[in-house]
Image 1: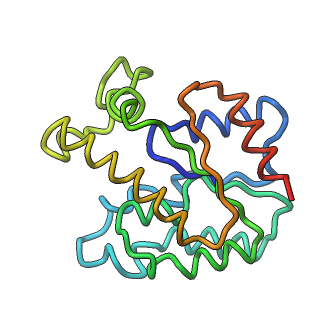
Image 2 (image 1 turned 60 degrees about the vertical axis):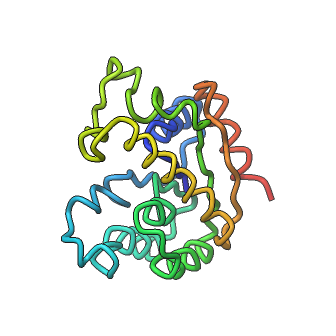
Length: 187
């Protein structure tokens, strides 16, 4: 699994894995695993089975198909970042463990959140996800991003999955991809 806040380099790392010949047999995009879960559901459904329906479908498919290698772009830690209740994702953690999943969490230093996750350089410094509007201000949006990353890091204390964090400050995607692939293949 490849987890991380928006802008930490999940898509860039996946592209680099393909470019350097280390792509897994099955790559499941974040649109399949998470999509816009918080925006798609009414507030009363954000803590029940409807909230995790995408992740349920993806894991059920992996359990049926048993690909030799797989990579989920976002998974249960992203759900924890949105609704921090481990009981909502604990069963997914166990099922992913049964599938032999490992968890790579991409992070950036808090001081880089503005440039990497909010006012992204690749979008000309624009808030392409309208986080500031959604949260009321740039300051509030940055705090929400900080909390989101912190919740993912905290969730590592709960997971049964082998896990490691990777700082992507360098944006050296080939190196990040090689590091992630080497760690995922290690015993």
